Length: 232
Image (cartoon, rainbow, N blue to C red; front, top):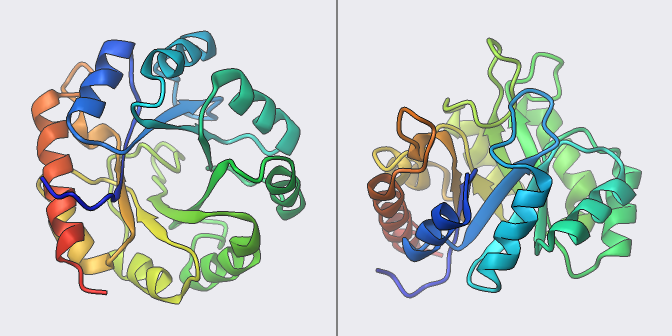
């Protein structure tokens, strides 16, 4: 496996044992989706906190949330003990600024959802939003809107990688690619987009919704190799 430290996040976990398996497979970050508008969380907030405590510093943990209030978001981050937060909802720019000011060491990732029907998900709007947020976040993450479920994440669907490629090239912050990634397409996705990292959720699960160790291990290995192959 590559020795270079990439950002390779696996999102969604049902137990501490599953989280430890993901860490053992080489993922660098574990995403914990909570307070979601569409999907039901895999674990409760108390269970998520126990998972974070059980992992210690073995892997970096990231709250994935759609909350729009900075203080509520920070309170949940502190309750869980996570090292980062992925802002997947429409948190106002002023609230993002407050979050940054209140927690300067917290890893803050701003999601850019491609394909939303209200116009905010087209390339021009996403680039404008990203430039506004850049002073207050550490990275961006592109994900997919699903018109059928109205979900903007954990859809199992890819979006137009050309949009993500252009954003990755234009932004001053690193871009993480998400949306329908699997062990079978992650290498092609990385080559097409040239992101700083990748994130996968449903593409690593079995029919029961549990993370499949074989899929996780293959995904991490493919992602490492593809990211290593990118030239500066």
